[in-house]
Length: 322
Picture (cartoon, rainbow, N blue to C red):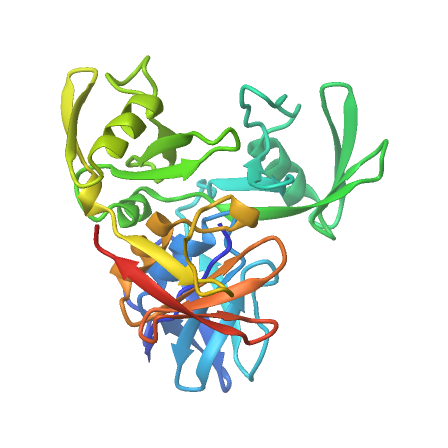
């Protein structure tokens, strides 16, 4: 997901260091950013382009790919502090037609690459300006560290690449506002719906019959029968309650005045209602940046508006408590 969040930050002397620290260069002095765990949480997402923060110099946007502030006099840096002998767990990702995927990951419809994030990181540390050749099936690719791109050696097709730290154990908890998993539904191309829950690792996982007493189809059937109801099910020896009414819906007003749901994947939108609700719960007066196939947008929670960052066109937004 490519997004951002606006928060108020204040500078201060360095406190107890985590394994990371985000700083801004103000004048000639690097100052620690308070609440930088929010920045780190976004930065660890391969789909996050950047984040907007409020400073004494006004709003600034931190570009995660360049680790730069694109406007204004400020500069930004991220420091990593680990005990001797330890290295940061880093993920390497490429952008396919719709999603950011980690090297070495495998799905039922996609061959895994001959290299993993660990392999790529090893080569990167040896030569950050070099390149790496690998295969996926019978196809060869070249990963160029200097341009952060992946090129198909046969077709010449080029894709963007990102290097991001993985979630630390104390960061994962930020993605759950309660002890229970969060649930979300998304529409599939065949017209059906896929129901997923967010676990402790911050990853969305589909409800499937071989691990859960109900699968996506059964959950959708019950939801259509009673969108305000609850559903009880088991995963192995644990019992859970899925409360349909507890998931607020976020909508925007389209050109014709029709209200439409935010749906991840529709026109390659990088955020769903559930994603937006997570950001809203963190800072109800802030904002979040997301992208579609053609444009980037800023959703302002305090004004309840959505603005196209290229055309500055503004549309109304609403949050529905079902």
